[in-house]
Amino acid sequence: MVLSYFPKVVSHYWSTKPLIRFRMNETAFNNVTQMFRAPVVDISRPLVTLKEPIKHVFVIILESIRADTLPLNRNLAKAVKSTFTSDATATKVTPLLNSLWTNSVRTVASVTSSYTLKSLVSIFCGIYPLNVNFLKEANAENFLYEKCLPELLRETFRTTNNQSAFRSAFFTAARDDFDHQRDLFNKLKFDTTINGFNIYEQVGNVPDLGMFGPADPYILPLMWKWIDNNLADKETNHMMMSLLVTGTHEPFPIPTDWPADDYRIYIDDPSVNSYLNTLHATDDFLKEIIDGFKLRKLYNETLFVITSDHGYVFHDYEREMLGLLSTPLECAFSVPLMLYNPHLEAKQLHGQFTNMDVLPTIMDILLSSIRPTHQSTNQLLSVPCDQVQSILSRYEGTSILRMPVEKQPVRYTFHLANP
Image (cartoon, rainbow, N blue to C red; front, top):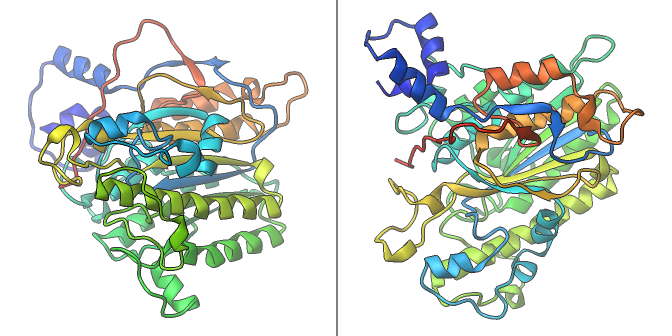
């Protein structure tokens, strides 16, 4: 019955699988459909300016980052009934990320699920995950009812020889043996996936850090190798990369090679303090990545999309909840979302955004970058409107770079808690 809340899921499954018949008042069905629909936007009215075309995309997904920690603000201390020290400022905890945030198109987004793998479905496929516990999306009998970003890029952008202009890869230091993760990534259709098992094979028997695999920096040699090989391949015009950063996942361990002097007391709650220290270590790690993109002269041509899979709960507001299991609290579902490129105008956006908006927004920018425009200083004005409209009509998200049409109903997001 819950499928009735997701009309695109229903229409797909009705056409492919026999379902138990049920009746629902048509008016009620339409009302529910309208509640969950992404806002309609005016494609001809961009909210920001993009001065130069974008060639590459890098989606960075940070584990368990709440909206009130990036950038860090007093709402976190208030929620956990604790007190910040003088070191607990955004410029000290996350100097790189804070700088990127200030110079980005930035907002707070709502995730569809506090379960990482389901959240990835929404980020890369622009759709709701199935409303069932654990990763049933990976089962052979279930379908991702729209093309996910890697496949969509391959089909949309072609070379003069009718070859795909994009190469795609997903990187993470975590192993891929948890809850059918490997099966899911086969369905997401990245050209290449590189994970913790590849680190063991190519780097050696490195120690694990935390619950899922080696520390994040161990993935970098493998990531640079893939990027450098593609840069050397003259047939590779564009790259779409994604990195799942797991260092900020509970139990928030500090990298063993991290200088002891770098550990700080940011807050008098021990769990939150460990969390903020792992975020600080992650900021150092991301700076190394940004420096690597600058060294390879990719920095100015790459759209960096930085967000989180979900938030985290630290006994917020004196609730008896720690972690994400079955929690309904907003801090589990509100995350930062930023789009950064030196040629993309920075702007704070206010609206009802979700992680399903990532795919349509990326496609909007890339379609706007097909041809350098000389008639206008804004690439977003050169977008093929019919192609963008086709994407917006198929996916559950919208482009956050376009002006919403006025007088629309409130947008509701259906959340699936970590089981």
